[in-house]
Image 1 (cartoon, rainbow, N blue to C red):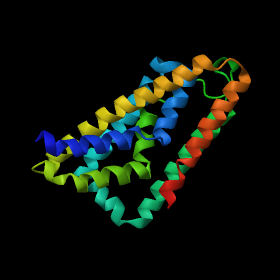
Image 2: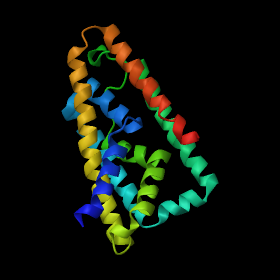
Image 3: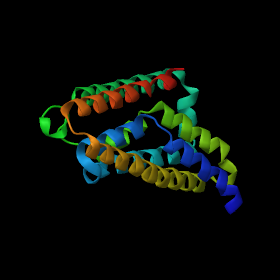
Image 4: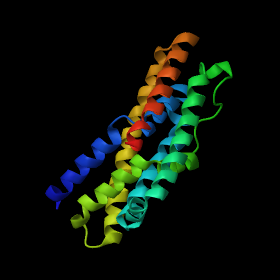
Length: 197
């Protein structure tokens, strides 16, 4: 059993650890608000990804992939939301400057971020198809994938958030903050491009 789960563990570790929209938000939130205040965002994204993986395992993700019009609606809404977040990050200065978001992204918004993320859907539906034989039914597969993606996302996002908090200690001037915020905003906006290919 351990040997058969190892590919799944490697897949979710790489899928959740590589840079993208969620990791960029976690890093930016850690830098702006600190690790502790960013925990709701991290948990929201992890819960969103875990529930998305569970739904994909139950077969509902296949319905989304079979309906191109619905895919485009999800892509458009998700892209607009990410661009709005990128704009807010780009416009913010140092945390004490009073511009930019005054509070971190909430748990609920973290969940919504993942549910509107076409990359998240593709990743979890792909995992459900690839690892379906690890469980003896869709419900057990949903639990397995949800647990794997949720735990991996918690670890990965916590590391990215901690990196952001560490970066915040190195930033000394408003110019440094503007440069970091602009870089995070650009990375977040660029993370949308692969979803439209």
